[in-house]
Length: 125
Image 1 (cartoon, one colour):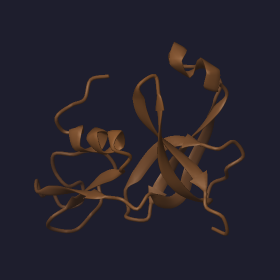
Image 2 (image 1 turned 120 degrees about the vertical axis):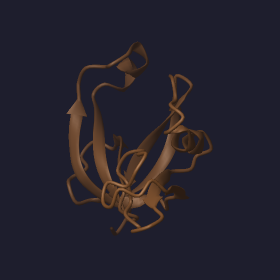
Image 3 (image 1 turned 90 degrees about the vertical axis):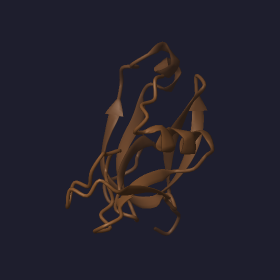
Image 4 (image 1 turned 180 degrees about the horizontal axis):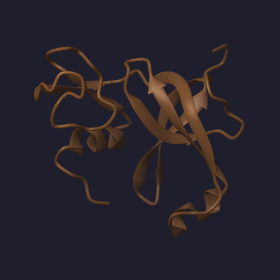
C-alpha cells in the first residue's frame, strides 16, 4: 500500500498501535481526514495528535464482498464510522451487531501485513 506524505503520520501511528488525527493550530478544529489546511478556518498549520481511541458510532454497514483476497476470510464484516471524542471521524472494522450511537474503543490489528482499525463496544457505554 502506498502512503502519501500527508497521511504518513497517521499510517506510521497505526503501525505502532496509535491513532493520530490532525487539529488546527489556530482554531482547534479536528480534521476528519488528513488535510493541507483546516476545513473550518483555512489555516495551514495543522498538528498531529494522539487520540484516546474512544468515541461513538456515527454510521455502519455490513460488507458482503471482499475487496481483495486478504479480506475473503472476514466476509461478512461490519465497517463503522466513529466520531472520536476529540472530534475527528474515522472508519474501521466493528463487531457485528453494533448500532449507531454505541460507545466504542479502538485497537489496531494486522491483515496481510497492513495495520487496520477495529472498534469494540465499551462496556457500560
